[in-house]
Image 1 (cartoon, rainbow, N blue to C red):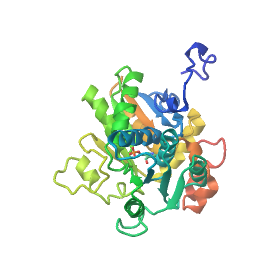
Image 2 (spheres, rainbow, N blue to C red):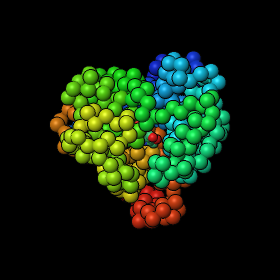
Image 3 (cartoon, rainbow, N blue to C red):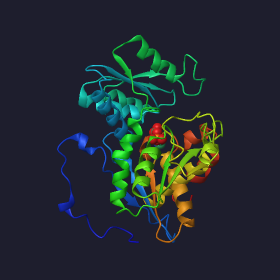
Length: 345
Ligand SMILES: Cc1ncc(COP(=O)(O)O)c(C=O)c1O
């Protein structure tokens, strides 16, 4: 391991891009050396915050819109609507800029002011909706998206949770990139689950190239999956005949394992990763990196573990990476551990 790169990179390798949208995909794969020192496996992070809009969701926003235009579902001038945590809406907003479609994001009250500002800057509208109420509650964000679509024939609901062009975006881009970047040596792929598009699409592609690749989905213990409030964990463990109450884009046939972790531990680890690797990663990225490192410790010599980073920790500087926010959100014990700068976390 080198402490610092010996010099600046070879300038002849610096790429020129003919258009901003060429900055979606082909994101860097970075080896983590300090936190993985002494492990028998190589551990890498796929840094999808290097996409144009700052997250992996540019891939799906653009692919969903491209395919909807091609199929005729999305007609010229139609408004695109969907619910989500904000990253996908940024992807739709970018796709809307490229194709001339206005965008409405149905967002939870927890949407960060920074993401809201970015969405408005990119020309998107934001309407409030809630993920934490029953699915038929008039305030549920799916009910709100459906209402907009039903009331206005010029509005098209993109449905990232069930639209198969979401995992297809990762099968067309993320998977092939990781295969190329590891020269086909990848043995494990670890990604956080929300819609499931990343794990399903990337995992499907990698297993198509090498059926021995292990695909691991991760989730926080404060999510429905993590709290065991749906059947996903049992289905991934091999139980058949269960009601499929998980996101339709999670393919249990692709997932070999589901790993759940406590949020507080992962946040503390995020501070540690920033201070040891210089990588500032979003909480879901840290969750997968933690699981990847545990796997790497057990994996056979020569294994190549790729952990997926959907977005940057810069998006969470006023949340998980702010001691005051931690204290206001019953995570004061994490703030006490991490706040004194320079001390080991
Ligand atoms: C920050 C972040 N991490 C992970 C995920 C999970 O990705 P996927 O929806 O492909 O399962 C998302 C998706 O919403 C996300 O925004």
